[in-house]
Length: 247
Image: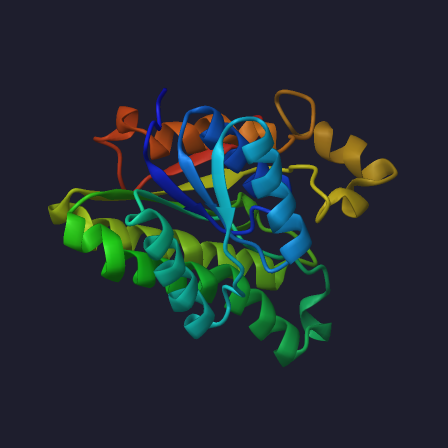
């Protein structure tokens, strides 16, 4: 098993990409700390893993709140004593023209997508990875800051910031043997995005994707597993595009 006895904290694991990653990590015998702001969804993911014979526990927190993040990380460590893998997956997307975007919504998207990744990374590094001198941090980026597009200014900016944060972290902690990388998914159908792909939108997008289809959460899992495992022990500061050839 590629993650046997590794403890993986996955934020936003109540559904979509986060849940798909959590389920696969558990299959690879990781001990999975499930985070989500939605208690019902988070507990459901943990329950489903345990029902399949895996090890998982739910840890609630709003990643945009640094105090809640620090308490969550402390709780994970109290339960499992270490964090080998951090997957900064929690995020939101908001579709609106830039000229109509309020200060409050701009702040909300950045606080969850970018600040959340910062808070989680800082807490895990301080409390587990740096003292133990090992670990893998996976940031969930996007193709959005690379291709641009209307109606997603806040999301694109936040994910561009995630890539910059990842590269800074990777260079800062590499001397300790800690790795940091990012996955940049393309157009993935999840509960958060499916409404956008209705009607002719999906067909138009698929015409610009080399593999001819939109992605699904399970398409991201292999990249996450590679970056979490020892197979990628000489990989850091990289963005791995999983986009079906849309770039």
